Structure formats: structure tokens, C-alpha cells
Length: 61
Image (cartoon, rainbow, N blue to C red):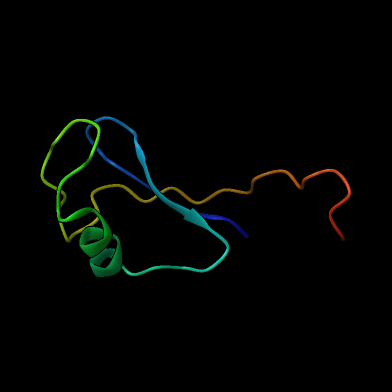
């Protein structure tokens, strides 16, 4: 599964990866501010979206 964390203001992808990350870890990576729109990032997630991303070609089943 691929985990994606986006800025709620502009949709910039703050984190995308196979391992889950805490909100605090992502905030620390970016210094608490979105690098694209400069909006302050909040500790409390506002929206949570869960979905499947299609498998890459040649990926094992």
C-alpha cells in the first residue's frame, strides 16, 4: 500500500511512501509549513482519504 499525505490548502504531496509516517514526523520534515503555498501545517488531519493505487507493471502480485 502507498501512503500519501497532502497539504490541505494546495494539495502538495508532503509524503508518499510504502511506510506509514506520523503527522508529527511529516511536520518536522517540512518545518511545519507547506513548501509550496507556505500555509501552516496542522497536527490534526482535516481530511482522510483511503483508496487503492493501481499496481505498477511488473510488480509482484
